[in-house]
View 1 (tube, helix red, strand yellow):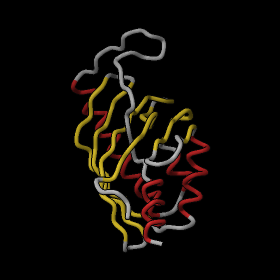
View 2 (tube, one colour):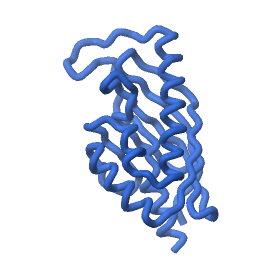
View 3 (cartoon, rainbow, N blue to C red):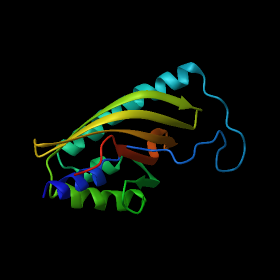
Length: 163
């Protein structure tokens, strides 16, 4: 049972990775470098969105949790196929929320990028049912969509294997 719970926890966390990050946008045109003030603004917005995301997990609100993702997001969890699209990510969270009480603390280590896309490196502590704790690291690519930062690609892994 503990193995199943740890696997579910590992599957749920997203909160986040980069498989490939370039300084080019999808049209192939080199993106403008972000000014330090742009990166600081992105850090503040991402910190707020991470807090809102964590709160939505505590409330088991899959719809609110999924809103932090772009419509074409990809969620890449260890030992599972990638989940493509905000609606599919929401469905995944709905399945996991049924089984677990969740608490997630995200800590941003570094943010870098340009004015259209940034990468966040961070660590997480994830707890379920007040008895299971998972510690790990993540990368998330955030992209501007409808004027706000949203997760475009997310991947993570725990520091220790699930038992």
